[in-house]
Length: 167
View 1 (spheres, rainbow, N blue to C red):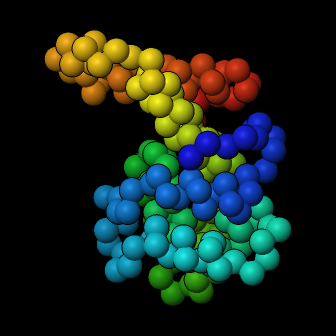
View 2: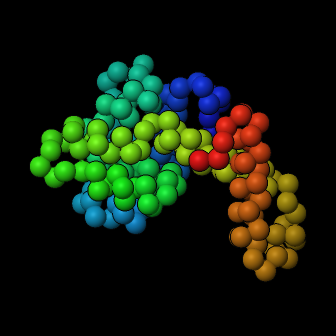
């Protein structure tokens, strides 16, 4: 998942579809949903009839709250906010109204920042893998934590270079 756009440039439908590939199938809060929300997103975007619409438009017109909730949690939005979005759902409301209530807690701009952050971390991890010597990687007792911290630092630097704040 890598975006060739600056923060002010809209993410395309294709960018969003690509980003979904790297997200987990299930998230802790989405396990309550009977179907894979990731699969639903991928199927829906793959068959989206108006291929000129950007990711923001698509997100803001989605009528299934559970898909929005999964996307937020899968991109790393804090559990507290995802739970708040779930709490905004009134079961007797229409699906469109439920999705709108969730989007008031989890607006597209917030989700897009998290998607970009995930992409930055993936790029950073690839850079570390490319340049780190294998014997150095094996020498760290907690290598996974060290690599993750380095990837986070690189992602922070990438965001700062774009003028963004950390989500």
